[in-house]
Every structure is written in structure tokens, then in C-alpha cells.
Length: 208
Image 1 (cartoon, rainbow, N blue to C red):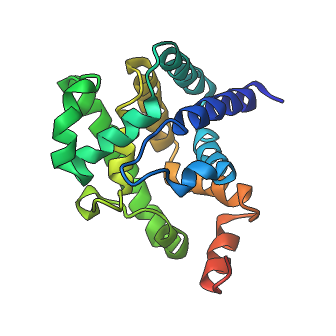
Image 2 (cartoon, helix red, strand yellow):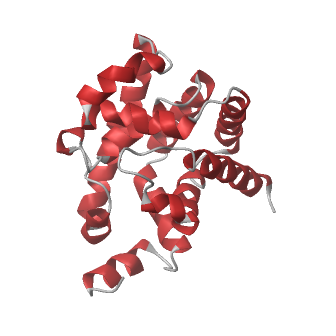
């Protein structure tokens, strides 16, 4: 097994462990009992990362474990700033503070990724329709958009991981690649399709 695959597997193991510790107001979520789907979703994302960013995020997870801090809980808590702002206000100060420059960097990443997501939706409308809504203004207390999810996740990264992730985004943009497309290509492959075109055709024909 190559080094990148080993890093991804180690990250997913730690994330799954922390995900089990996320407490939902309405009780345990069904996705917390579905390790296979969790693995596909997370692996398809991490396959798009370079090794240095993976190693840095792995260190973030290990440090969080040592400090008994749950990055998965933090991620979902940060999303609540948009989905249920009244509840978020009650615990916002318990989350690690993020300065103006840090937030500016996160928003630059989000802006580019939302452009990629919208471009992907135009090319593959059936696949795109199966995912989250794209923009934060589409959030509801029960439905979190891609933008809000990404904002929550980026907020959990260490400064080093975020910087490496930003450099990766810049490189992909320079190379004319679309991160959303790469992510969903891997998701399609891990779900048994040979290509995004095959997955789009299957959904068009009403197949799962």
C-alpha cells in the first residue's frame, strides 16, 4: 500500500472514531451507523489531496485526540452559525478563535470551491442534484449547504493544514482542474461506476 493510501486510511479511522462522539440534539444520526458510506465520502475527498496536506491534517487529528478535543463535533458546531444561529451563539466562545486573516483565507478557498461546484452542476446536473445545495443562503436547520459544510470543515484545520490546502487549491486552479469534479469522480469510482459520465447516465435512466 502506498504512503498516501496509508495516510488516508489512518485519517478516516481517526475521523470515524471522533464522528462516533458527535452528539446530535435529536439523538444518534443514521450516518453514524454507516461506516461504508462514511469511508466512501471521506476517501473520495482525501484522494484529491496531496501527501503533505494529508500528513498535516493527520497531525491535527492526533493532536486533537491528545487534547481530548473532537474535530468532528467542532465542524458541525461551526456549521450551526448558519443553520441555527441562536443555538450557535450560546457556545460560540468555546470554539477556537479564528482571526481576520485566517477567515479571509478560508473565504478565498470557499469562493473558488463554490465556483467549481456550480460549474460541475451545469455539466452533471443529475449527480449534482443528489448532493447538498450549494450556497449558504439555501441552508435550513435540517439541510446544510455545501458552502456551510466547507466553512465548518475549514474552520477545524490548523493554520498549517489550511495553508497547504490553499496552496493545493491554487495549484489545481492553475492547472485548469476542478476539485468538485475530482472529488465526485473518485466517489463515482468507489461506488462502482467507471466514470462520471456513466454515473450521470445511470441517474438519468433512474438507476441508483
